[in-house]
Image (cartoon, rainbow, N blue to C red; front, side, top):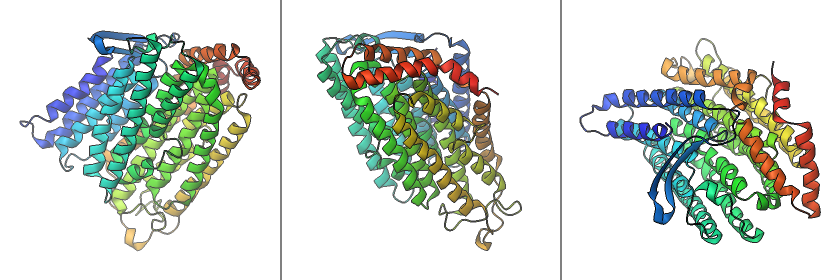
Length: 520
């Protein structure tokens, strides 16, 4: 059943590439495939047992036994929400694309190939299979930026390619090192979790993974490729890049960093928490200084991924739940903001906040776009009633007992988020609409519908967080308990202090209690 999420987009991409198919039909076929995949994802959600922490709907097919490579798929509370976001945002991206886009056959085929690769990475339970899909997503996104990007698309695409290639090399080195040094001939995740390598060896492998996944997240200072890629990428590619692809990095930290090396994780966790603070504050302060709407949202992504890093570093059951919820929240909010920035650019021809003004004008401006932008900004700033508040609340409550200073510093980032989005909205949507921007073209339903759908999800999950957190609670609790047992076996003073903090976190902020307190 899970294979359908991988193979359906691939089959759709192959159909689109058939020479007999008229180019005018490519969008329709892509939309049908994306809709089918979204419905299939809903069917998987309905079959998923949220009370179980184990992998579900597993598929296993032997492949290349000599290399330890097998076709192992499974879904749990870590991957299911991300699969749902991937399917939703792919549908949104395809729906919002014009059918007459240049080289439409290749464009829509690449979009479906990208969906297939990301779904495969989230579902893979074999380290080499994960690496295969992780590298496969590089190709379609590189081409989407290089062919349909802006004026500096060549530079941005090449930079993205180099950074992602380095990320892949580091991950492959860590995976092979783990398999060879542990003496296993298999790359299956469950097999490698039982390794008992010396702590020094684990640290080397874990740091290699953190740097590799840190490029994808991205962790400052490995982030410089992201703003360039966002600015030059077409709108739909930016939606998928921010909403889905960045999550491969944080998912990798959860699944392979914390999951494979819980003993070494407790040593690097304080340093990772510091990097989380750097991400949040750097992304926020740089966003304040930007004038390009896309760059503001791009640096906002850098900052908000810092919250995920903090939660994973804390590794309490509640903070791990918060990391998954924050990934879902950021995927929805960043996807909405990039969609709206794309509409503004297509109608006005600019993203410069020093030029734009008065777009909320109800008669001649873009009032619906402005209203949705205000709601997206409110969600990003953590206003109650929206999913951003739920995510940040869980992250802070789960992380504070372990890293109180770092958590308080990250809270400053929430306030700074409100600052740079207030600046953006005040400059762009309020004031007098310039005559040069008067009587802007009407926003089509093709542009309205995706943004409205995503906004409804942001509000619905903010008002009913249990719809979202119930998928992940059992899995993150089990993962947090594993970390708790690992720390309990240590005797060094610093780790003993963290053990006390973990005890308090588990005693006073269980996931069920925290979420029930948020229910209206």
